[in-house]
Image (cartoon, rainbow over all chains, first blue to last red; front, side):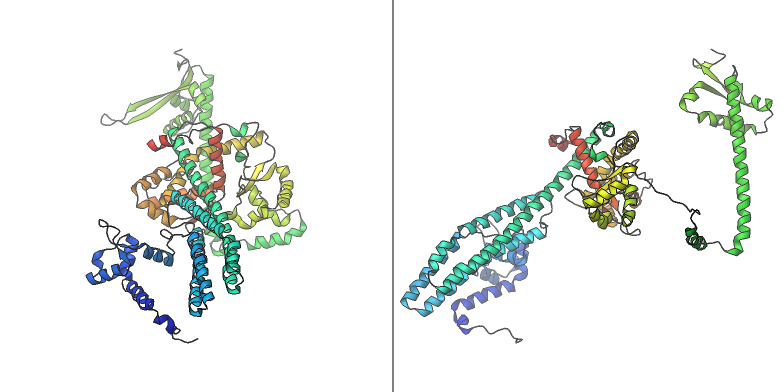
Length: 425
Length: 206
């Protein structure tokens, strides 16, 4: 391997096309930035070039004016070149025309055979070269098309953003694929065998090589086809799902009182609602198996302990807390019980009873305020039905004429019959 | 059976097993003979291994629909139906905020940070988030969007529709249970003959 690029054959250099082509390729390279900007924006800005450069690009068949009104653009073939080089699937074109290639191949073979008959070695070699190129162009064109299809497939048509567009793109790809397969159908190998005749080189080029490439491409295309169908199904499913969600939520918003059927109590419960509720399997330390005792003892030893030094004071505070808490709880219970007794008394009595009087009569030690509060709380806490059976009347007086504060001084509780106190009824 | 203990326990606890929550167990459950063995064990508990229509998620269903089972199902179904609208609205919100085309599907990942930055940039999304977060199913009392988002996602994770691979990292993966929810929506639509297929024009008006 030498470091320098391989020397170009001098015969190629002597071809008059060589210099012209090189000059034009360089021209494209020189203005790459402005041309790419034009590619992306869809039109080329004239101000990006000097007058001279612009003229060169137009003469060099790189840029053109589609017609008098329209602005300067890249020639379609340049657009296509860039799209193909950058795998830009938005603009990449698939050329599946086979007929043209086959016509050209036929013509080349005829010219080749004519040159051979004449014994013109140079001409026949030239025709052979053109013929080889033509065949490679054709298979290369298929190869490019298939590569483009794969590329779009592998990126899941990421070059368009919306799902609708993706579905349209897949449909387009499917049509392209069908056209390529149709193109394969046009290639008639019997004709090509006849055309090649007994010439080994031609046979290899036109029949065995071509056949191998085409069958390879067909296999690839079938795979693409399969994958396109799958992808399409997935996109359609996604689309369908998004639609379902949107419409269902719109429906539920418009019909807030919509009632769903009672599926769980149907004779045939739909599978979609049959989901068992969770069970937690708890287990506890058990000492009824001797063989576990060692492991349990290990566990017990591993339980983190509080620091020794703090235990005493901690225990004391905790002990006190608990004692106080339980005392409060006992008192609370007693108060609730006394209030309950008061309610029972009310039920037994045929007259409404005053809370304050009851407190005094029964010589209960509760602070009147707490006592009344507990009665009201108990009354408010009753279930609706029971609450309805009682009637609570609060006797209150305004604390001062300057505000709305009323102090409850007593409550009277009685049974309610026909909407009033018993005595009223 | 011993080696399937943890799997059984998770199923019994009411978990849905899919490729997101536990890929290994999911593949195990694809074996019919294992499911048969598990069902044999589950029979006295009145449970069996079930899967959704497209087989993307496994869970336990009741074998026999006795009174007890029906009562449980009723309760669960009522809860699901009541939380249906907020769930659907959440799905729409995520889809729109993240600029996705299709609806959320099992395996989709959601980074809370991305979601938050998209929502905060858009007044209408912000309003919808606030409305959603204050729904009785999500019970967020915060006025801050980031707290609202955290609360909503936490609740949905608890419902089993989201999986959080790392406890301290705020990114979630949608689980297969969502497929079950979509199936339920489709079922309700078909069963109740909801006129939502035929009237896209009407919807467009709103």
